[in-house]
Structures are given as structure tokens and as C-alpha cells.
Image 1 (cartoon, rainbow, N blue to C red):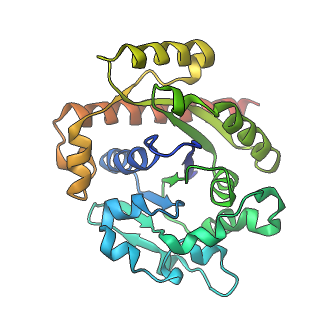
Image 2: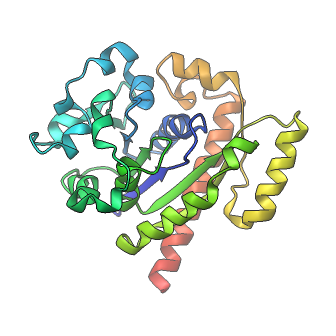
Image 3: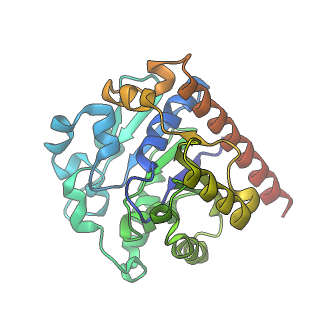
Length: 269
């Protein structure tokens, strides 16, 4: 079975990249999929979501994604792929040890551009790989794109979050020159508050500008997401009957449907 690899990218922090990976991993696991979550952000927020800040911050480089980029480390799946308390979810963790590898102008990094893609060839046994990227388009995000089949761009419906989308689109097109299988799977409106006129206005603008690439499912700002995160569980496992869990389920199913259509189109082509 083909492993679907999705990276979540936006140049701005606080756009919901980490939370999207965290909660979607839970939904996909409930669907019976084996999920690997890769924390490609030196802040390590996604890793801390599963294991807590104290444990993650103390990890040596050889037990984090930094080992994939380090010339003096031998990266092995046995050391890096860490099971979580959630059945069918494993994580490759990150912390500040990754920061020195996340250099600008990644297209000049030689074979390090393909470090993550090469490593993932040695990691069998997963149906879905979700990659959380830092809020820039440096080497970590570039590696994630070159290792992925798909890109999702989380976008809160506000001015700062929508700035720079053109640069993200350009980076995706550049990455496709080296990874022709890469496809934009869509723009995800997230952290939305329908009570705010400005959020409704920006949602309308995003749909007008980007059309069908914008997901039908809109992820609201909801306390259940934060409470579940504080309990180290995706909302699908912490509060499976909540509205927040239903939204994530709808989004997850929409993602699976889009991937199915993209794969079908690729086979026809």
C-alpha cells in the first residue's frame, strides 16, 4: 500500500500546523491507519504535545530529527520512531537541536535537500505520514516538501496569516521540479470564529481567490482542542463525542477523499 505523506506549511507561526497534525493523527488512527507524525520544527511543539515539554527538551540530537541532517550521527528508525500512548501513532521528535540545520536557501544545500526523503525510505509500516513544518521555508520545510506527496496550507482567516501565501505557492512549484509527485492538497481555514465579521470576510476572500482548493471543512477555535492537547491526547481520543472531534473527522475524511481523487488523476495521467 502506498504511504501518503502530507506536510503542513505556512510561513507564519500560530497557523495551526502543529495542532492539525496532532488531531488529524488521532482521527486517522481511529480509522485504522498506522500514522507517523514527523516534527520538523525546532520549537518541538508537536513533540511536546505527545510527550510533554520536559521530556522533549532534554532529548539528545541522536534521538530527534536532527540526526537525519547531522553528518556525525547515524539516523536509524529504531532510535527515532517513537510510539505514543495512542495506538497506531508514532512520532519522530524534534527540539532546539534541529535549529542549526534549518538553514535558509535550502536549494543550495546539496544532498541535504533529500535527507528526510532518503531516511523515510528506511521507515516501513505506515499508511500515513504527517509532517509539521516550522514557520519559514528553510531547509526543514524544503525537506518535508521533497519527501511528501501532498502539501496542506493551514490559514487562519485574518490578515497576517494570508500574507505571504504567494511565496508559499512559489516554493511548492519550485519543490515540484525536484519532487514531481508533490501536489497542493488544499488550503485549510483554521482557528475561525464565525462570530467575527473579519473572519467571515477573509474566508470569503480565500474562497474567491483559491476556489476549490479551499477545504469545505472549516476548523473553529474551540477549547476542546486545547484541553485535549494539555492531556496529551488528540481530541478524537480525549473527547470523541465533541463537536471538535466531529470537525476533525469531517476534515480527515475530506483529506482522504482528495488524496483518492489525486491518486486517481495521477494514474490516468
